[in-house]
Length: 159
Image (tube, rainbow, N blue to C red; front, side, top):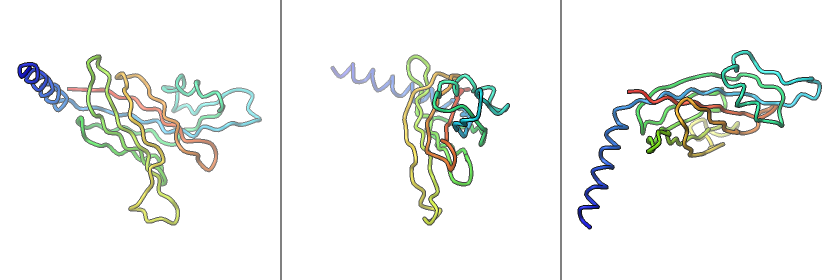
């Protein structure tokens, strides 16, 4: 019984050491998704070509405008901040890599609310998920003045 406990601890330490030596690069595509009744076909900003297939899944919208594209790199366990606009900021924390290579992420979008102190934003979205490196994760965000905020994330782990 004690031997099994030791093996689990050693495995956990090796996994923690392995993830501590790796950096993760997170790339964010922040998109304004709207429905335009006059549009005869879907339209995408040219900067969104890399994520067009992911946005195609959003059947309630037909117009996709880039708000921001940003990337950040850091080690597992470090929270990274990606500014979407003056109102929203995306925070991503890569937690670990699972046995099949997926990267577990904590994500949240903070919103600065008009009339509230800027040092006291609210959480507009909070999620935890696993993502295969170079695959895309679609996060449905809060409503914008026009349309909805949609985030497409990709992650890459490096030595």
